[in-house]
Structures are given as structure tokens and as C-alpha cells.
Length: 496
Image (tube, rainbow, N blue to C red; front, top):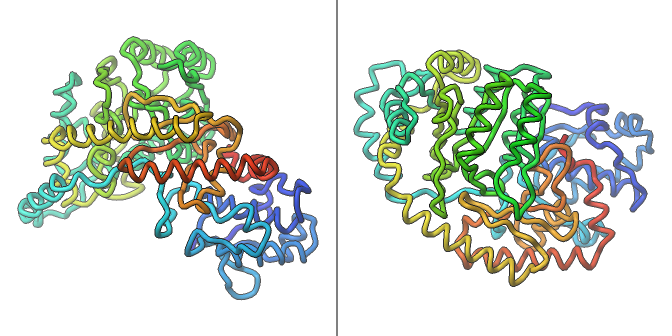
């Protein structure tokens, strides 16, 4: 269970929910549903009672009763005792086709973390690959043979298993960033690593510079820390690279405590920051006293052969975050932080307030994978190139008004849409058998309604099904401009 939501808190999330486009109960139900789908109301949260919410919103109790009934019918609210139903997800992507709201909007899955995907739905909300098959299996088999030697110990290690720290440090040294094992802290994935860095280095109301757009879960972590974000926009395609002049200005004027950057096959655009811009960025961050955090999770997914040194090669004070999630398998939940020894000790102290260390067997297996990091990559990169080409051709053939940006690497294509319809597409997508992550998830302040990230992690035949479904969803919106405006204007999808 996720606790309860007070009437005042729900009213704040709802914002200006009643716009008069349809009956009040329907608009209230639609906005609550979008809040659930976008992850802003956690699953299992008890909603306010009908009476208290009606008083807070200054509407009739009948309006709230009907809205809750609609949410129950669509599968977004449990049928608990009285009126204290808890938020949930429908068992399938279908909705009550007998209601006008159901016929218009469907039951959407917007890419909020942790949402289960109904059978038969193609998931385009996540950009992740299946496991690298035999390579991962072999690593775990070897790890099990090494485990007995560690069983006499306690099993807690906030820094990580030594064998894995040594392997990661050797990998950094091999690419021009001399690193000792004492400069590595092993984490449960890159998101865990970022949370540790944030907890150790920033406090509430501290400024954090972020790219616009950027990785949605990083934005969530920064918000959860209570920081004030300083977004700096990337130049729109067909320009490439970063707007370093704007970055330098923001660093000089805002003096953020920390800057979170994805320089290697940036999520979601797939861009690779050139070495010249890296030098300028590192120099500007040092001049402003800003801790530079480089998310290198996608660094190994180099599709076009472009080269760039890690940011830490230009300044060893840069904090680097890495992971095996994208190169090998997200199920490994193995990541790391590379920083100075003193900084690693600070991170380890912060980490012990969150957990006492990661699983030992997974770390032993990860050590094998890091030592042979390049082994599965040629085949995986070849498959990704084929899928990238297929996706770009399919988008050109079936959605010619969309403007996809060809990525240098990574796992997805960032598309500019012909209208501000990203959220509307996301809401109705499950009606057509796909699940999307709306563009505003990738920005600060509800921007990017005219953008959509489309991963190419599926094989070409599945991508064809997905693009044809996108075409059908786009046709639905083109035939119903009012639907697009209603969903676009909902405050539930504007993530502050």
C-alpha cells in the first residue's frame, strides 16, 4: 500500500481540471486517471472520501461519486469499503466501450516506472534490450563457483565486491581515465547511483542543471530531493551537439550545485557530445564550482563509430555513473560511481542510509561481464543498426509528417510531431496495442508535447507493427481535434 492522499494534495495535483469540455465527473475521472498513469499518484494510494473531496473542490458530492464510479469501471480504482478506494491498473488495456469517455480516451499506460504491461501490448515506453543470452548465463555460472569463498564473510559491503570494483577501475584506465578500485562504488543500477550522489551532494532548494530534454527518471530523482532544476535546451534538430553558450551562461548566472549530463548517446536524442564541447563544459563547470555528473549508461551503444573521451578524462573531479543495464541486461541491476577516493567515501556514507550493499552473486557475475565487456557488443550493435534503419524507414513511409532525429547511438529515436499531440497519443495508444512515454516526461515544465521517443530495441517485424499502430493512433487524433486539445491541456501530464 502507498498510504492515502489528502483532499488538498489531490486538488493541488488536479490543478485546473474542470474546463467545461464535457461533464464535470468525466473530466475529474480523466484527470485522476492520467495522474495515475503518469506515476504522480502512486498505485495503491487511497483517494479522499467523496464528501471531503467534494468540499475541497467545491463541487457536488454526486460529481465525485460519479467520477469514482467511472474510475472503478475502467479499472483504475479498487472497490474497497466505503469510498476509500485505492488506485490500481486495469487488468487489460480495454475500457468500457459503452461510455463516451472510454470510447474517446481508452486506458493508457504512459511510461511511469513499474507499470505492468498487458499481454499483447507492444511496450515502447522503455528503451531496453533483452539479456545478452549465453554471455549473462555463463557469467552467473562462474559466479556461483566463486561464491563459496565469500560465504564466511558478512556479505555487507557498501563499496561493492572487490573483484567488480577492480574490473570497473581497469575498464576506466583502459579508456584513458586512470582509476584505482578505491575510486569505484558499486550500486544497484544507474538510478541508484544518481540517488546516492544527490543525497550526498545536494539539499532542498539547491539548483541542479539538467539538459532539456533528458532522462525522465533522473528528473524524478532530482525532484524527489527537493532541488530546483535549471533546464538548458539542446538545439533542435537538424542541429547537433549541445548549446554550450547557454550552458556556460546558466552555470555562470545560476551557479548550480550540480549538473547532470548525458554526453554519450544522450537519452532521448541519441547525440554524442564532441570532445571540444566536453572541454568547454568541464572548464565551465569547474569555474562555477558545479559538480559535474556524467551519466555514461549508454556509452557502449555506439552505432556510427564516433569517438569521444569520457568527461573524466578532461577533469578527474567529474563524477561518472555507469551501468550494465543497456549493454547487457537491465535485470542485472548493477551500476557504479567513479569519483575521487574522498568523494567515494562520502557517497558510501550516504549509501548506508539507503541500503547496506548489493547482492553478492550479481556482483561476481558483473565482474566477469565487465572484464569481457566487448564480447556481446558487436552482435548487439549490428542488430540495433538494423532496427534503427528499419524504424527510420517505417516512420518515413507511414508517418511522413513526423520528423525523427537520426541518433548517433543509444536505443531510441526522438521524433518531432506535426502537432502538440504526444500526451493524447500516449493516452489512446493501448487501444491500438502499444504503450508509449509521453514527451513531457523528458522535460521540465510540461514541454515536449510535440515530441515522442520511439525505441528501436525491437526486431524490425515488431517495429513495423508498432509504427502501423502509431499511424492508426495518429489517424484517430487527426479525426478528433477536440480530443487532442482536451488531453493536451490536462495538467496531469505537465510535470513540474
